[in-house]
Structure formats: structure tokens, C-alpha cells
Length: 355
Image (cartoon, rainbow, N blue to C red; front, side, top):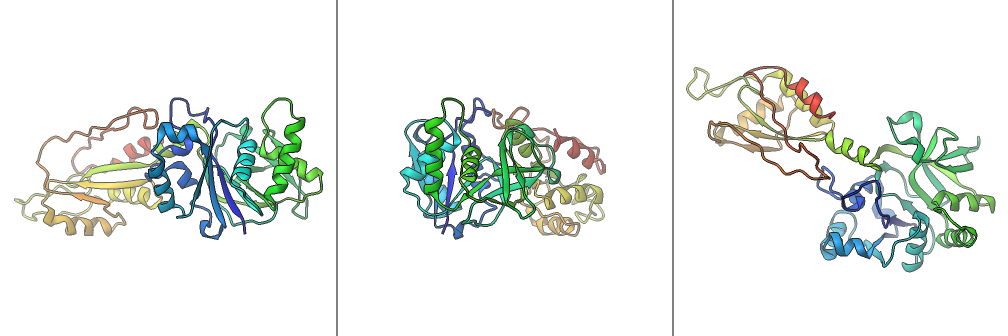
């Protein structure tokens, strides 16, 4: 069986002034490390080992709480391998993790700064994505492979586009010991510069090892500050009034009471965002809590699910206050003021979700 190795001991130089990227909080509330593993069948791995820096554990988190979270959300037997000093490269981090954790047999390496769906591999395999199947990415920071007609990798190059197949951060090696041997051979002859995992792959290919590719699906990249912020910025928590925004303005004193109809355009734009996983909606209203079922029913008819309902609020001006930081940049809170019963909500939200 294969071991899943998660090397996260890098300095995260592309995220200055922030926690190491594997410890950044995603819109779901989970760590980037947790989100990055959701596309893998974790229960099929023999072991799961996180290789990190002791410095990061001591400076940024409570180790016991972190381990508890990872065991609750990933797998209960997940292991932490804490290095006492930074390594010189990603490949060296992998090497140290294998040696210190006494990993044997097949090993799969997974980057922490992206998401993709892939199967478990016990043979030499490189997980790839076709450039034509993704949007804008930082192409110059990827490694690329050339593949023969029979599916064997014939070349792998770091940070040079030689084909439309790029390595998306998943590498399987049939033998952890073979990886270590190849790394040691490169290290002993490597005077300067970073040793990449692709260098290890290439050396093994020269020694007769055969690598195939596996095409990942659902690829999402968080590898740079821009990509991380774009991903987070498209996801919104919306505190939305009912009367005059989602339902036509009602009143307990009116002829129809609270039985007002949905403003279809506004509800449908929220429903579409929610269906794509980009929206968490909190309904706020001066209507009494007893009107919750009616409101949820009218919105549900158009496909909108209320995540939280806050009713019985005073009929006053509403103010949203939120903090901002490097990980949640200014402005971290915005307000939309609509004319009563207007259908223009979609135009405002389209702007906010692409800022």
C-alpha cells in the first residue's frame, strides 16, 4: 500500500507577512492543507505523514489542537514529522520525511497549495493537468512532461513549457527508497541551486525507471498570493434583508400581511452563486421569527437555501463591522443599498465576486 506524504516545510516566500500557506484559513474554515487533500481517497493510504518545520508549529499554532483538527477532518492516524531546521529544497523535505518517518514501499507526494481529484497510485506516476483545460495559471512556475504514444513519460522539465501537460503537484514513486537513492546521487553532485522533485524523476528515468501520467480533474491552484486571494474573493458570506430585497416589501399592517412574493431576479442570482459553492447566505429581517418557514419556503421555490435566519431585528439602520488583515484584505466588509423592490442585486454581486 502507498503512503501519502504532505511536504509543507517551505518558507512560503510568495505569501510575505502571513502564516505559512499550509496554515492559512480557507473560506470553508479549514486549513489550506486540509482543503488540498479533499480530492484524494485518504482511507486507501497505508499512512499519511505531514512533514513540517518545528518552528512553524511553535510560532503559529498549538500543536495538540492542530493534530486534533487534522485527525478529525482528514484521518485519525495522521502523523506529524517536524523538522528542526529548514531544508534547501522541496525534494530534500520529501527525503527527510521519508527517512525520519521510516517510510517504505510506494509513496505519493502531494503539494499543499492546490486541489485536484486523483486516484491512489502505487507505481511511478506523475499527476498532470492539460493547460487547455484550466483558466489562467502561472505557467512559468510549473514543470512539464512529454509523453509517448504508449503513455510513458519521455521528458520532464522544470519551469519550461515543453508540452501542454503540466505537473500539478502529485508524484507517485513505486519505492520510497528508490527516491531517496536518486536524491542522494543528485545531492552529492549538485553544487548549487534547488533540487526539484522533477530532477529526481528525470534521474530515475535515465536509470531505466518508467513513469506514466494520471490526469487530474477539478484542479484549483492557490500557489501564489494572487491565486489565493482570487479564490477567496469569489466566495461571499451575504447578510441579506428580506423585505424589498428577496421578497416584495411586506408589513404586518398591510392587507396581505407578510404574505409577499419573491423578487425572482434577486433570489435567482443568489441561488446560482449558492449552487456553485460561492455563497453562504444569512437572512436578516425585522419579520418575527415565526415567519421563518414562510420566508424559507418562498426562497426555496426558486432554489435558494437559507443557511442562517436572524429574525425579529429592530427596524433600524444596519451596520456591518469586520476586521481586515493580510489574509483577509481591506475592505473585508462591504454594503449594498438597493432601492426597495429593485431587481439590480445581480449587477452589484457580479462586481463584488470578481474584485
